[in-house]
Length: 82
Image (cartoon, rainbow, N blue to C red; front, side, top):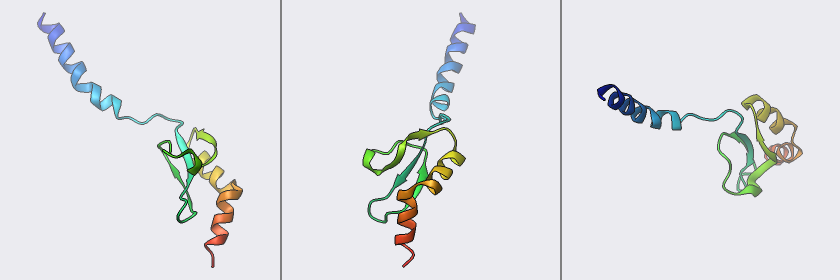
């Protein structure tokens, strides 16, 4: 019975640490409506209108490439070059 109790205690202690790990494949390109600048984030935006593209991307590098290739983000960069 002591072994079961110890195992349960270890499992309960490890659960919060496992819950905080990020899931691969959850990167988004978002555009700030105030500054009109794009950036990559690892959390789904609360407002879908701020999201650039069709949804989540699998890697950070893929999201950065999507941001560079996006016409919306490219237009915003040119607007801020004044």
